Length: 196
Image (cartoon, rainbow, N blue to C red; front, side, top):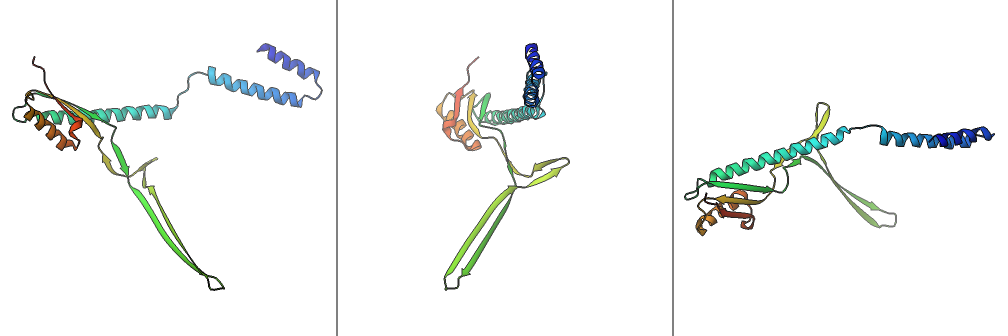
């Protein structure tokens, strides 16, 4: 590094017209400072990145709470069926809840008829449609108005229960779960619980 600065200093002394050399040397020093600051300048934190991690953790927590709530309700209701004992349930979800915003829909139609001097007619029809999300101000931030919140999609359910050794009870549990969650029977697995 010192050799580079000595070369620059010697070249400045030798040359009579130093303007191009000074310009190039200045640019090189500037680039060097930028790289040094980027790699040796210490740790920097991006607030946006931290917020994104926190938001993801919040979503994961909300998904987990939703799963636990559904599993508990399922265990409670299935254990009430005649002949079924203790029930453990595991619910698989595809993704988190989906928020559906309110849209402002704009549509316009315009018809123009033109007649030229020789008697020819031309009709032009123009239809414009568009939509945008309706946003409301909440203090210092803007947030979209939410029309509805769709629950996470359930992609599969596993049930382990006492008393499902016969096919009728197993089929009863499968049908009950299919009707509750509107999922096909291929996504519901029912197994007998181990005897302890």
